[in-house]
Image (cartoon, rainbow, N blue to C red; front, top):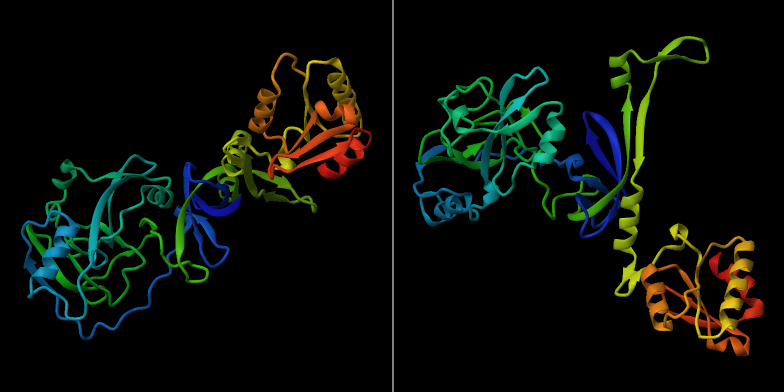
Length: 392
């Protein structure tokens, strides 16, 4: 289980995730250190500003038949007049500009433009977390009629920004730092701008952390590569601070008898999710393998055979074990084959399986470790102390 930092309306939070490929949540973890976080809480290490003194002046070019970033990059590398001299253009060199409408708590919608490298998409989960309590929605055809300077498919920084023709606030990904060189929309149909330099040719209104996280992104803690993983959220803590208490006027008397605003927090544990996490992380092709700390029983006791003797001995042993403080699941079914009972015990997955069967006539029972499959014959007279030692 891993503790992840998260975000909730500006309040600090932690989520506790059990890594599993079928988990409902995505998180990142570092391959070199102990950093882990939900995707909406990852802080991108911004590159240092670059020297752009040798970058040519920005120039608009006709770029027909480039409906996708891939086709734009292909055209840019094929045409000699557009190709870079140092290396080929890539999708990460394109500046994608996406506009959203954001509804505030008062119901009023405001346009917001986001610029990010073209090899990434806006992560809507991250966007919603950043804009909360605002609610974002995609920019639609009817919205373009309200902003005539925007050209669908060719939106660029020339029109974006509070000080520019659209008047739309323009926030960029942390990777769009001074000196970075881009291909982006020229605000005219069928045209893109090349060699557009951040800090020289445009200045955004600010920075926003909403780009999707990709495998290999830099770890904010150690700088090495991050990897994406899936997990089941089995618990969370919200460190709410005094934000909501102040809004509610929630105060109490302190030790000095003075009124103070309370500090709020909340937590939750998903019991059913915890069971799912155990099942995903601790099983084999035969069934569950409960970790002893959370197992529903310490011992799965099985009686086999057609005679009464094994059942009587098993019932007596069950009573002794329970009297010693162990939790026992006793399978006393008659008329059921030993194979069925053994299969059921492996499916249920109690850590220690005890069989009272054919070796009872010799004074022995069989003790099996569910995880390792190791089997040991134990004298029934010594069974209670032996099993107490096994179960810790």
